[in-house]
Image 1 (cartoon, rainbow, N blue to C red):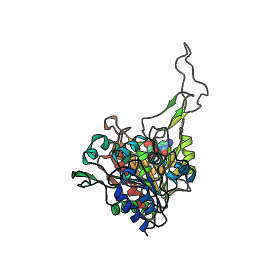
Image 2 (image 1 turned 120 degrees about the vertical axis):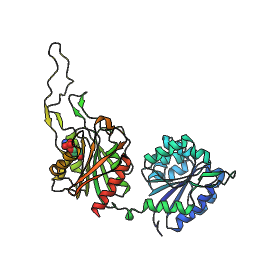
Image 3 (image 1 turned 180 degrees about the vertical axis):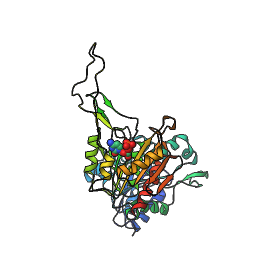
Image 4 (image 1 turned 45 degrees about the horizontal axis):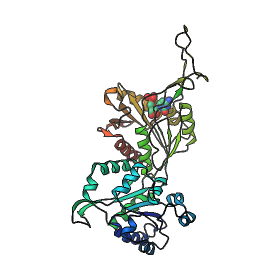
Length: 401
Ligand code: C5P
Protein backbone atom coordinates (compact mmCIF):
# COMPACT_ATOMS: atom_id res chain seq x y z
CA UNK A 1 0.00 0.00 0.00
CA UNK A 2 2.62 2.47 -1.16
CA UNK A 3 0.10 5.33 -1.41
CA UNK A 4 -1.74 4.56 1.80
CA UNK A 5 -3.72 7.55 3.02
CA UNK A 6 -2.57 9.81 0.16
CA UNK A 7 -5.26 12.07 -1.26
CA UNK A 8 -4.94 12.36 -5.00
CA UNK A 9 -6.97 14.77 -7.06
CA UNK A 10 -7.21 13.28 -10.54
CA UNK A 11 -7.95 15.80 -13.27
CA UNK A 12 -9.22 14.07 -16.41
CA UNK A 13 -9.30 16.17 -19.57
CA UNK A 14 -10.80 15.40 -22.94
CA UNK A 15 -8.73 12.95 -24.90
CA UNK A 16 -9.29 9.39 -26.01
CA UNK A 17 -6.71 8.35 -23.38
CA UNK A 18 -9.36 9.22 -20.77
CA UNK A 19 -10.40 5.57 -20.91
CA UNK A 20 -7.03 4.69 -19.35
CA UNK A 21 -7.84 6.98 -16.42
CA UNK A 22 -10.43 4.46 -15.30
CA UNK A 23 -7.67 1.90 -14.87
CA UNK A 24 -5.47 4.56 -13.27
CA UNK A 25 -8.11 5.18 -10.59
CA UNK A 26 -8.19 1.45 -9.84
CA UNK A 27 -4.38 1.23 -9.63
CA UNK A 28 -4.11 4.25 -7.34
CA UNK A 29 -6.79 2.92 -5.02
CA UNK A 30 -5.20 -0.54 -4.92
CA UNK A 31 -2.19 1.18 -3.40
CA UNK A 32 -4.26 2.84 -0.71
CA UNK A 33 -4.79 6.27 -2.26
CA UNK A 34 -8.05 8.15 -1.99
CA UNK A 35 -8.94 9.48 -5.46
CA UNK A 36 -11.09 12.55 -6.07
CA UNK A 37 -11.82 12.97 -9.76
CA UNK A 38 -12.35 16.28 -11.58
CA UNK A 39 -13.55 15.98 -15.17
CA UNK A 40 -13.53 18.62 -17.90
CA UNK A 41 -16.43 18.89 -20.33
CA UNK A 42 -14.19 17.27 -22.96
CA UNK A 43 -13.42 14.31 -20.69
CA UNK A 44 -17.15 13.71 -20.26
CA UNK A 45 -17.42 13.18 -24.03
CA UNK A 46 -15.07 10.20 -23.72
CA UNK A 47 -15.96 8.58 -20.38
CA UNK A 48 -18.98 9.15 -18.18
CA UNK A 49 -18.93 10.58 -14.67
CA UNK A 50 -20.94 7.50 -13.72
CA UNK A 51 -18.05 5.18 -14.64
CA UNK A 52 -15.46 7.44 -13.01
CA UNK A 53 -17.60 7.77 -9.86
CA UNK A 54 -18.16 4.02 -9.67
CA UNK A 55 -14.43 3.35 -9.75
CA UNK A 56 -13.42 6.14 -7.40
CA UNK A 57 -16.36 5.46 -5.05
CA UNK A 58 -17.14 9.08 -4.50
CA UNK A 59 -18.33 12.31 -5.96
CA UNK A 60 -17.07 13.37 -9.37
CA UNK A 61 -16.43 17.10 -9.65
CA UNK A 62 -17.28 18.66 -13.00
CA UNK A 63 -18.64 22.14 -12.63
CA UNK A 64 -17.06 25.38 -11.48
CA UNK A 65 -20.42 26.98 -10.94
CA UNK A 66 -22.23 24.04 -9.35
CA UNK A 67 -23.87 25.02 -6.09
CA UNK A 68 -23.80 21.44 -4.94
CA UNK A 69 -20.04 21.02 -5.59
CA UNK A 70 -19.23 24.38 -4.06
CA UNK A 71 -21.21 23.50 -0.92
CA UNK A 72 -19.52 20.13 -0.75
CA UNK A 73 -15.89 21.29 -0.74
CA UNK A 74 -15.54 24.36 -2.96
CA UNK A 75 -12.93 24.70 -5.67
CA UNK A 76 -10.26 26.26 -3.48
CA UNK A 77 -10.42 23.48 -0.90
CA UNK A 78 -10.55 20.93 -3.70
CA UNK A 79 -7.27 22.42 -4.95
CA UNK A 80 -5.58 22.32 -1.56
CA UNK A 81 -7.05 19.33 0.32
CA UNK A 82 -4.94 16.80 -1.49
CA UNK A 83 -1.35 15.56 -1.42
CA UNK A 84 -0.93 15.50 -5.18
CA UNK A 85 -2.79 16.50 -8.32
CA UNK A 86 -2.44 14.12 -11.25
CA UNK A 87 -3.56 15.42 -14.66
CA UNK A 88 -4.19 12.36 -16.84
CA UNK A 89 -4.74 12.68 -19.66
CA UNK A 90 -3.48 16.25 -20.04
CA UNK A 91 -4.54 17.57 -23.43
CA UNK A 92 -2.59 20.20 -25.36
CA UNK A 93 -5.46 22.59 -24.66
CA UNK A 94 -5.42 22.07 -20.89
CA UNK A 95 -1.62 22.44 -20.78
CA UNK A 96 -1.88 25.68 -22.76
CA UNK A 97 -4.37 26.98 -20.22
CA UNK A 98 -2.19 25.88 -17.30
CA UNK A 99 0.91 27.49 -18.81
CA UNK A 100 -0.95 30.76 -19.19
CA UNK A 101 -2.83 30.74 -15.91
CA UNK A 102 -6.29 30.53 -17.45
CA UNK A 103 -9.08 29.42 -15.15
CA UNK A 104 -12.35 29.14 -17.05
CA UNK A 105 -13.56 25.77 -15.80
CA UNK A 106 -13.21 23.69 -12.66
CA UNK A 107 -10.11 21.74 -13.79
CA UNK A 108 -8.09 24.80 -14.83
CA UNK A 109 -9.23 26.78 -11.78
CA UNK A 110 -8.18 24.01 -9.41
CA UNK A 111 -4.80 23.80 -11.15
CA UNK A 112 -4.30 27.55 -10.78
CA UNK A 113 -5.42 27.60 -7.14
CA UNK A 114 -3.33 24.71 -5.89
CA UNK A 115 -0.12 24.87 -3.90
CA UNK A 116 0.34 21.10 -4.02
CA UNK A 117 2.64 19.15 -6.37
CA UNK A 118 1.22 18.48 -9.82
CA UNK A 119 2.04 15.51 -12.05
CA UNK A 120 1.11 15.88 -15.71
CA UNK A 121 0.58 12.93 -18.07
CA UNK A 122 0.20 14.46 -21.53
CA UNK A 123 -1.69 12.68 -24.28
CA UNK A 124 -2.18 14.05 -27.75
CA UNK A 125 -1.47 13.61 -31.42
CA UNK A 126 2.32 13.60 -32.10
CA UNK A 127 2.05 16.71 -34.29
CA UNK A 128 0.36 18.58 -31.46
CA UNK A 129 3.02 17.38 -28.99
CA UNK A 130 5.88 18.54 -31.24
CA UNK A 131 4.24 21.87 -32.16
CA UNK A 132 6.27 24.89 -31.06
CA UNK A 133 3.35 26.17 -28.97
CA UNK A 134 3.13 22.92 -26.97
CA UNK A 135 6.92 22.81 -26.57
CA UNK A 136 6.79 26.33 -25.11
CA UNK A 137 3.94 25.44 -22.79
CA UNK A 138 5.66 22.29 -21.52
CA UNK A 139 8.85 24.26 -20.91
CA UNK A 140 6.89 26.89 -18.96
CA UNK A 141 5.15 24.25 -16.86
CA UNK A 142 8.43 22.48 -16.11
CA UNK A 143 9.94 25.80 -15.06
CA UNK A 144 6.92 26.37 -12.84
CA UNK A 145 7.88 23.16 -11.04
CA UNK A 146 5.29 20.74 -12.46
CA UNK A 147 6.40 17.15 -12.98
CA UNK A 148 5.78 15.18 -16.16
CA UNK A 149 5.37 11.50 -16.94
CA UNK A 150 5.37 10.54 -20.62
CA UNK A 151 4.17 10.91 -23.25
CA UNK A 152 5.44 7.67 -24.76
CA UNK A 153 6.15 6.78 -28.33
CA UNK A 154 3.76 4.43 -30.04
CA UNK A 155 0.66 4.16 -32.10
CA UNK A 156 -2.15 6.51 -31.18
CA UNK A 157 -5.53 5.13 -30.19
CA UNK A 158 -7.07 7.17 -32.98
CA UNK A 159 -5.96 7.24 -36.59
CA UNK A 160 -3.03 4.81 -36.41
CA UNK A 161 -0.54 7.71 -36.41
CA UNK A 162 2.75 6.92 -34.66
CA UNK A 163 5.14 9.13 -32.69
CA UNK A 164 5.45 10.74 -29.25
CA UNK A 165 2.08 11.54 -27.74
CA UNK A 166 0.67 8.37 -26.22
CA UNK A 167 -0.24 8.79 -22.57
CA UNK A 168 2.06 6.99 -20.12
CA UNK A 169 0.62 3.68 -18.93
CA UNK A 170 -1.35 3.78 -15.65
CA UNK A 171 1.38 1.89 -13.79
CA UNK A 172 4.02 4.38 -15.00
CA UNK A 173 1.83 7.21 -13.74
CA UNK A 174 1.42 5.42 -10.41
CA UNK A 175 5.21 5.01 -10.14
CA UNK A 176 5.77 8.71 -10.89
CA UNK A 177 3.14 9.63 -8.27
CA UNK A 178 4.87 7.39 -5.73
CA UNK A 179 8.20 9.05 -6.51
CA UNK A 180 6.75 12.51 -6.04
CA UNK A 181 5.00 11.64 -2.79
CA UNK A 182 7.63 9.51 -1.19
CA UNK A 183 9.13 12.21 1.00
CA UNK A 184 10.75 9.52 3.12
CA UNK A 185 13.03 8.59 0.27
CA UNK A 186 14.00 12.17 -0.41
CA UNK A 187 17.48 12.86 0.92
CA UNK A 188 16.63 16.21 2.54
CA UNK A 189 13.28 15.21 4.07
CA UNK A 190 13.04 16.60 7.60
CA UNK A 191 15.83 19.15 6.99
CA UNK A 192 15.28 22.89 7.25
CA UNK A 193 16.99 25.28 4.87
CA UNK A 194 17.22 29.04 4.58
CA UNK A 195 18.22 30.60 1.27
CA UNK A 196 18.76 34.26 0.38
CA UNK A 197 18.29 35.48 -3.16
CA UNK A 198 18.18 38.60 -5.31
CA UNK A 199 19.59 42.04 -4.71
CA UNK A 200 18.84 44.36 -1.82
CA UNK A 201 17.52 47.87 -2.28
CA UNK A 202 19.04 50.41 0.05
CA UNK A 203 16.96 53.58 0.14
CA UNK A 204 18.49 56.99 -0.49
CA UNK A 205 15.13 58.67 -0.03
CA UNK A 206 11.52 57.45 -0.49
CA UNK A 207 11.92 57.19 -4.30
CA UNK A 208 15.60 56.40 -4.91
CA UNK A 209 17.70 53.44 -3.88
CA UNK A 210 21.07 51.74 -4.36
CA UNK A 211 20.76 48.33 -6.00
CA UNK A 212 22.66 45.84 -8.17
CA UNK A 213 22.04 43.64 -11.20
CA UNK A 214 21.22 40.39 -9.38
CA UNK A 215 18.10 38.75 -10.88
CA UNK A 216 17.57 36.19 -8.10
CA UNK A 217 17.54 33.36 -10.67
CA UNK A 218 20.31 31.35 -9.03
CA UNK A 219 19.02 31.76 -5.47
CA UNK A 220 15.43 30.95 -6.42
CA UNK A 221 16.59 27.88 -8.36
CA UNK A 222 18.54 26.67 -5.32
CA UNK A 223 15.53 27.11 -3.04
CA UNK A 224 13.43 25.09 -5.51
CA UNK A 225 16.11 22.39 -5.84
CA UNK A 226 16.42 21.97 -2.05
CA UNK A 227 12.62 21.72 -1.75
CA UNK A 228 12.60 19.11 -4.50
CA UNK A 229 14.92 16.98 -2.39
CA UNK A 230 12.44 17.24 0.46
CA UNK A 231 13.85 20.14 2.51
CA UNK A 232 11.56 22.58 4.31
CA UNK A 233 12.83 25.79 2.67
CA UNK A 234 12.50 29.44 3.65
CA UNK A 235 13.56 31.74 0.84
CA UNK A 236 14.39 35.28 1.90
CA UNK A 237 14.27 37.30 -1.28
CA UNK A 238 15.18 40.84 -2.14
CA UNK A 239 13.13 42.63 -4.84
CA UNK A 240 12.95 40.37 -7.94
CA UNK A 241 10.47 39.85 -10.76
CA UNK A 242 10.55 36.05 -10.50
CA UNK A 243 7.57 33.93 -9.45
CA UNK A 244 7.79 32.20 -6.06
CA UNK A 245 9.26 28.69 -6.40
CA UNK A 246 6.76 25.94 -5.62
CA UNK A 247 6.66 24.44 -2.18
CA UNK A 248 8.91 27.11 -0.65
CA UNK A 249 8.06 29.66 2.04
CA UNK A 250 8.99 33.07 0.66
CA UNK A 251 9.76 36.13 2.79
CA UNK A 252 10.16 39.31 0.78
CA UNK A 253 12.47 42.02 2.00
CA UNK A 254 14.10 45.12 0.58
CA UNK A 255 17.06 46.13 2.73
CA UNK A 256 20.04 44.09 3.98
CA UNK A 257 19.06 44.70 7.59
CA UNK A 258 15.58 43.28 6.90
CA UNK A 259 17.17 40.31 5.13
CA UNK A 260 19.38 39.56 8.13
CA UNK A 261 16.40 39.72 10.51
CA UNK A 262 14.40 37.33 8.30
CA UNK A 263 17.32 34.89 8.04
CA UNK A 264 17.85 34.90 11.82
CA UNK A 265 14.11 34.35 12.21
CA UNK A 266 14.38 31.22 10.05
CA UNK A 267 16.91 29.60 12.42
CA UNK A 268 17.40 26.91 13.58
CA UNK A 269 18.12 25.37 10.21
CA UNK A 270 20.34 22.57 8.91
CA UNK A 271 21.30 24.38 5.72
CA UNK A 272 22.00 28.03 4.88
CA UNK A 273 22.70 29.05 1.30
CA UNK A 274 23.38 32.75 1.05
CA UNK A 275 23.06 33.65 -2.62
CA UNK A 276 21.72 37.20 -2.38
CA UNK A 277 23.85 40.02 -3.71
CA UNK A 278 23.55 41.98 -0.51
CA UNK A 279 24.55 45.63 -0.82
CA UNK A 280 27.72 46.14 1.20
CA UNK A 281 26.72 49.67 2.07
CA UNK A 282 23.54 51.50 2.83
CA UNK A 283 22.95 55.23 2.99
CA UNK A 284 23.79 56.15 6.58
CA UNK A 285 20.70 58.22 7.11
CA UNK A 286 18.16 57.73 4.36
CA UNK A 287 16.08 60.85 3.83
CA UNK A 288 12.46 60.54 4.77
CA UNK A 289 11.57 63.20 2.14
CA UNK A 290 12.60 63.16 -1.51
CA UNK A 291 15.90 65.03 -1.89
CA UNK A 292 15.30 68.18 -3.94
CA UNK A 293 17.62 69.64 -6.55
CA UNK A 294 18.54 73.08 -5.32
CA UNK A 295 19.97 75.58 -7.82
CA UNK A 296 23.61 76.36 -7.14
CA UNK A 297 24.05 73.73 -4.41
CA UNK A 298 25.34 70.85 -6.59
CA UNK A 299 24.77 67.19 -5.82
CA UNK A 300 24.05 66.20 -2.22
CA UNK A 301 26.75 64.20 -0.40
CA UNK A 302 25.82 60.56 0.25
CA UNK A 303 27.26 59.18 3.45
CA UNK A 304 27.41 55.38 3.42
CA UNK A 305 27.37 52.98 6.34
CA UNK A 306 28.38 49.32 6.29
CA UNK A 307 25.62 46.74 6.07
CA UNK A 308 25.64 43.63 8.23
CA UNK A 309 27.30 40.65 6.57
CA UNK A 310 24.56 38.05 6.68
CA UNK A 311 26.69 35.08 5.62
CA UNK A 312 29.40 35.93 8.15
CA UNK A 313 26.82 36.37 10.91
CA UNK A 314 25.30 32.96 10.14
CA UNK A 315 28.73 31.31 9.71
CA UNK A 316 29.69 32.33 13.25
CA UNK A 317 26.29 32.11 14.91
CA UNK A 318 25.62 29.96 17.98
CA UNK A 319 22.81 28.35 15.96
CA UNK A 320 25.07 27.90 12.94
CA UNK A 321 23.46 25.50 10.45
CA UNK A 322 25.40 22.30 9.74
CA UNK A 323 26.04 23.32 6.15
CA UNK A 324 26.70 26.97 5.36
CA UNK A 325 27.19 27.91 1.72
CA UNK A 326 28.15 31.32 0.37
CA UNK A 327 28.59 32.70 -3.11
CA UNK A 328 31.43 34.85 -4.32
CA UNK A 329 30.67 36.98 -7.32
CA UNK A 330 34.04 38.26 -8.45
CA UNK A 331 35.47 39.97 -11.48
CA UNK A 332 39.10 39.11 -10.66
CA UNK A 333 41.18 36.53 -8.73
CA UNK A 334 38.10 34.34 -8.37
CA UNK A 335 39.85 31.43 -6.64
CA UNK A 336 41.99 33.42 -4.20
CA UNK A 337 39.13 35.62 -3.18
CA UNK A 338 36.92 32.56 -2.76
CA UNK A 339 39.43 30.92 -0.42
CA UNK A 340 39.73 34.04 1.70
CA UNK A 341 35.95 34.31 1.87
CA UNK A 342 35.56 30.69 2.99
CA UNK A 343 37.70 31.44 6.03
CA UNK A 344 36.43 34.88 6.85
CA UNK A 345 32.76 34.04 6.56
CA UNK A 346 32.89 30.71 8.38
CA UNK A 347 31.38 28.88 5.40
CA UNK A 348 31.75 25.21 4.45
CA UNK A 349 31.59 26.00 0.78
CA UNK A 350 32.01 29.05 -1.38
CA UNK A 351 30.54 28.86 -4.85
CA UNK A 352 32.70 31.26 -6.79
CA UNK A 353 31.89 32.69 -10.17
CA UNK A 354 33.30 35.29 -12.48
CA UNK A 355 30.69 37.97 -13.02
CA UNK A 356 32.69 40.13 -15.42
CA UNK A 357 30.15 41.72 -17.80
CA UNK A 358 31.37 39.62 -20.75
CA UNK A 359 30.37 36.38 -18.96
CA UNK A 360 26.68 37.41 -18.94
CA UNK A 361 26.26 35.53 -15.64
CA UNK A 362 24.83 38.40 -13.61
CA UNK A 363 21.19 38.56 -14.63
CA UNK A 364 21.61 35.71 -17.17
CA UNK A 365 20.35 32.12 -17.12
CA UNK A 366 23.68 30.25 -17.16
CA UNK A 367 26.49 29.97 -14.66
CA UNK A 368 29.94 28.47 -14.51
CA UNK A 369 31.16 28.01 -11.00
CA UNK A 370 34.05 26.77 -8.91
CA UNK A 371 33.38 25.05 -5.60
CA UNK A 372 35.85 26.10 -2.96
CA UNK A 373 36.04 24.08 0.25
CA UNK A 374 38.74 23.46 2.84
CA UNK A 375 39.55 20.30 0.84
CA UNK A 376 40.25 22.11 -2.41
CA UNK A 377 38.65 23.43 -5.58
CA UNK A 378 36.24 21.69 -7.91
CA UNK A 379 35.31 23.29 -11.21
CA UNK A 380 31.92 22.64 -12.80
CA UNK A 381 31.30 23.06 -16.52
CA UNK A 382 29.08 25.80 -17.93
CA UNK A 383 25.55 24.88 -16.78
CA UNK A 384 22.11 26.44 -16.59
CA UNK A 385 21.36 28.02 -13.22
CA UNK A 386 18.76 25.26 -12.66
CA UNK A 387 21.44 22.62 -13.25
CA UNK A 388 23.86 24.36 -10.87
CA UNK A 389 21.04 24.44 -8.30
CA UNK A 390 20.25 20.73 -8.73
CA UNK A 391 23.89 19.73 -8.40
CA UNK A 392 24.43 21.98 -5.42
CA UNK A 393 21.36 20.56 -3.64
CA UNK A 394 22.85 17.10 -4.27
CA UNK A 395 26.21 18.24 -2.89
CA UNK A 396 24.49 19.53 0.26
CA UNK A 397 22.46 16.32 0.71
CA UNK A 398 25.66 14.32 0.38
CA UNK A 399 27.42 16.46 2.95
CA UNK A 400 24.57 16.01 5.44
CA UNK A 401 24.22 12.27 4.97
O1 C5P B 1 31.85 39.59 0.61
P1 C5P B 1 31.00 39.26 -0.56
O2 C5P B 1 29.84 40.19 -0.77
O3 C5P B 1 31.73 39.04 -1.85
O4 C5P B 1 30.43 37.82 -0.18
C1 C5P B 1 29.49 37.17 -0.94
C2 C5P B 1 28.76 36.20 -0.10
O5 C5P B 1 28.40 36.79 1.15
C3 C5P B 1 27.44 35.81 -0.72
O6 C5P B 1 27.14 34.50 -0.29
C4 C5P B 1 26.48 36.82 -0.15
O7 C5P B 1 25.16 36.33 -0.13
C5 C5P B 1 27.00 37.00 1.25
N1 C5P B 1 26.82 38.34 1.81
C6 C5P B 1 25.96 38.51 2.86
N2 C5P B 1 25.80 39.74 3.43
C7 C5P B 1 26.52 40.80 2.97
C8 C5P B 1 27.38 40.64 1.91
C9 C5P B 1 27.52 39.39 1.35
O8 C5P B 1 25.30 37.54 3.27
N3 C5P B 1 26.34 41.97 3.54
